[in-house]
Every structure is written in structure tokens, then in C-alpha cells.
Image (cartoon, rainbow over all chains, first blue to last red; front, side, top):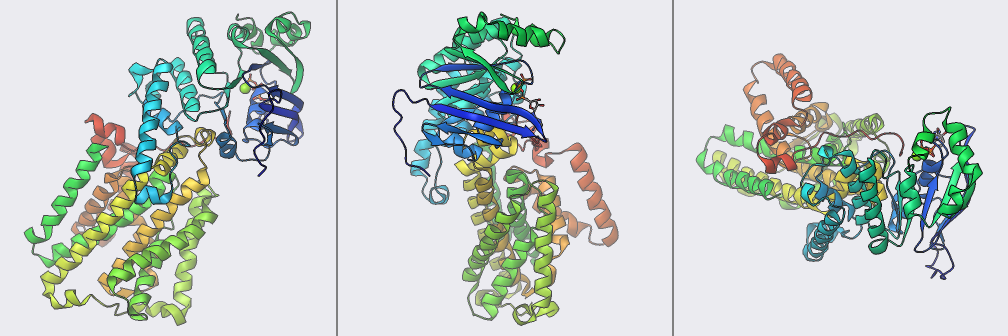
Length: 276
Length: 327
Ligand SMILES: Nc1ncnc2c1ncn2[C@@H]1O[C@H](COP(=O)(O)OP(=O)(O)OP(=O)(O)O)[C@@H](O)[C@H]1O
Ligand SMILES: [Mg+2]
């Protein structure tokens, strides 16, 4: 393990260089570069199958890239196991809704505090004191997170009884509980109606202001993306197409083509893309 | 949480007065056997209910515990209060080794490799005659002097309290682990492996903790069993112990602490009750297992949980099979 390097203000929190991965000869992502600065909200967008989720999986250790590297806070994280990457402060959510569905909302968020409440085996079996205090702190912070996300009234509800919108919020809550430095959300607003998506945008802004340093967002809801992002990276066919501020992206012909050109004939990416 | 805790306390109190209310040595014998099975079922439940994998080789640890206690008492002359804990520790060491290999596997692979370990140990026990006396087994594992002096009912009572002590220690250890951060991490892995990893849980290490404790408990049970029946042979690795454990855990309710305790007591009772009809007995058990799997996948605790709310939250959730890839 390398020594902790204190990142200079200019050094990005996350820097991925030439990330590539092939599945049985098919290039899913090719030479993809990405940086996320300290305090920055970056969105990663692109038509279905562009490779966004695959990038998330490479950055968080679920897939091993066949080429390229990723650094987080100046340390190489490619090759690390997912839990080891999470422990460094890079925490992600999943596109396919993933919570611990037999646990209640509150239990889900408490479980998310795993790293804060880790205890030695001695503490587990003999001395409870320190771990009890940590557990109590985790419960308190869980209650705060549940409130922050507006899930207060459903705190004791088992997760499998939640509506789609609440599930999305709960996923964010579980991720927040792990105290990420950089939070990565994969289509957190999928399945939400316009009002819910707007409310979700508000929650995201609060989160970035109070809970995490930076946010990397994959999202098809353009209203949400344009509203919250400092910078947008557009992917198509596993490659970076263009990146820039929301205004630059909106004016780009390439983006229009990527979405409308393919989407009109494809499976409705245009519909999603135009939903702003 | 308090619900499960107070039910456990209630069971313990009931257990404390039992041997004085019932002076019948045959009933006391059944109670001792039930105690051994309570520990075994609790042990297996840690794997089935908390690691979320299915072990068919759990007799490995029971057998190691039994041989360890038998050898430590016959060859080294150690007393029972040392042999049983040491049997647990030795089984725990084997648990670390076997866990390090098998916990990298999932699903059917885990099942097959754990089964293979138990089978290998059975073959070793049968053939390493220098150590284990082969198929002849180790006879005359000594009884504690107090048991020999106390007569038939008194001796059973002493064994009963030793078994109760072992049950209490085992349940306490299991309870502490399950409620600990490691226990919650295990539940997280069982519920959703990907989410667990993304909040920093190391699935392998977490499973190792639970698996090792499970092995220790099975070792306790084996060590105590060796003294109680005073004979240990290769058949401690036989599959019928395994079958009983599985029925107990499934019937009582995997993933709860109380479920396997209930399951063990009920199955030991039923096995005795059905003893006349040997062949029919196994058939009936097969039917019971099928019925449980089909109609009450969370066992008795799952059925109970349909009523009071506090049980509903504790009840074993059905195991979720993890998808192959994160998405
Ligand atoms: N494990 C895998 N095996 C084979 N191919 C894969 C695998 N994971 C991803 N792919 C392929 O990689 C490409 C990119 O998929 P990915 O899921 O990253 O797209 P996406 O941008 O997240 O799309 P969406 O907006 O639909 O979520 C797709 O062609 C997909 O089929
Ligand atoms: Mg995706």
C-alpha cells in the first residue's frame, strides 16, 4: 500500500486514465478518461449500452479493467477489491435497485454504517463498551439520514414494502451511511415521476452540500442532470464523446446525434434524453 | 431484539428446573441428547442462516471435537472441563482452514466441497489406526468422577447441567456474534452481496468469522458427546447427524437464534416417538422436510412471525439468491 498523499487543491479526487474492458472480444469501454474534482458534481450520460454502468463497475472494483488505471485521492485503486475501494471513501449505488430488502429502512441505514461500527473479535465476545458507543452513534446518524431523505415515516417499514421512489432514496441513504468522500449514483432517478425527480434533485443538492465532497452521477433524466451538474461527460459506444458544462453539452451537435440519431430507431433513448 | 432475548431467558429458566421436576433417567437422557443437538443446530444455523450457504459437511467439526476430547482424555488424562473447550478450539482451527478453502466457493460448489471434507475426515479416522484406533474406535472415554459417584438419576442430572452449561455458552456466543457488527455484515452479505461490498464489507472475512464460530460450537458438541456416550468411532462423521441438523434448522427457522433450538428439541422428541417404526421414521422425516420447504420456508419461527410484530422483524428472511453480476 502506498503512503497517503495529501492531494494538492488542483489534483482531482478521482482520475481514471484509458480505462478499457472487453467482454469476450467485445469492447464495452475503450480508453475512457475521467476526472472528478474535489467538490465537483460530474454527470456521466449517454444512450443505453454506452458503457456507463460498466465504468462504475470498473471504478469500484466489481470489474477488473483490461487496460488503464484509476486513482482515488492519489492512490491507484484498480485491482483492489470492491470493499477495499469502499473503505477508501468511494461508494456507489447500483442501477438495478439494490437494498437489503428483508430489513427495515432504519436497519438498512444502520447496516450501511458498517465501517464506523467495526469491532475486534475481543469486543464482539467480551468487552461491549466501545462498540456499544459506536453502535449508538451509528443509530443516531441513521435516524438523521432517514430524516434527511424524507423517509422518517417509513423508518420501520421493511424495504420490500417501499415504493420505487422510496427505494431509490433508501439506496442513497445506505451509501451515505458508509460516509463516502465521492458518492457514485447509477441512475438514482430511474422510475421516478417528474415531481419525484425534482424532489430528488433537491435531496442531491443537500447531500452534496452537507454529506459528501463530490458526486458522480449516471442519469437519463436530463432535467436532473442539467440542474445539478458542474460538468457533464457524454459516452457513446464505450468511448467518451465529449465533455463540458451543461450549456456546452446542450448546444452540442454530437450529443444530439448520439441521442436522436440512434435513439429514434432504438429502444427509446431519445424519449429519455428529451425528458427535460 | 428484546423479544428474542426474553424468550431465550425463558427457555433457560425452564431448562434449569427441568431435571428436578423430571427424575426419569430416560427423559433426562433425551434432554442431554437434545442439548447436544441444540448446539449442533445452532452451529449449522450460523452457516445456513447467516453465511447464507448450505453445508453438508458439518459433521467434520462434530467429529473432530469428538475425537479430540476422546484422545485428550484417554491419552493425556485431561478432565472434561478442559477437553470440551479444547475440542471446540481444535474444531475452530480446522474451521479456519476448511473455511479458507470452501468460503471462496458459493452455492453447489460450497455444498460439495464441505461434504468432501467430512468424507475425507471419515476416511482418515477409519484408516489412521495409530491415532484413532481405526474402525474399532476409541472406547472408554472417561466419565467425570462425580457422575460415577452420583448413581443413575444423579449422574444424568450432572450430565444434564453440563449440557445446559454448554448450550448456554454456545447460545451466548452465537447471540453476541449475530448481534455484533460481524453479524450485521453477514446479514448484509446474505441479503445483497453487492450492496454489502459497496458499504465496505469484506464478504470472505465476514463469512470466516461466522464459519469459525460455527466450527467451534460443533466441536463443543462433539467433545461433550464423546464423554457422554464414552465411545467415539468413525461413524461420528456419518451423514445421519447431518440430516438431523438440517431438519432441525429448517424446521425451526434458519436465520433466527430461537428457531434451531426449537427445531432440535422437537426433532429429538419426534425421533424418539417414532422409534418403533424405523423405516417409516425416515420417510416421515422426508415428508416433513418437504412440507417445511414448500409451505413454511422460514420454519416454525416464520409461522410464529405471522402474528406478533416483534417476531416478524426478527424472523428469518428467505434467502435471496445473488445475481451473477452487479448492475
Ligand atoms: N458482464 C458483461 N458481459 C458482457 N457484456 C457486458 C457485461 N457488462 C456490460 N456489458 C456490455 O457492455 C456494454 C455497456 O453496458 P453498460 O451496462 O455499461 O451500459 P450503460 O451505459 O450503463 O447503459 P444503460 O443506460 O442501459 O444502463 C453493453 O453492450 C453491455 O452489453
Ligand atoms: Mg447502466
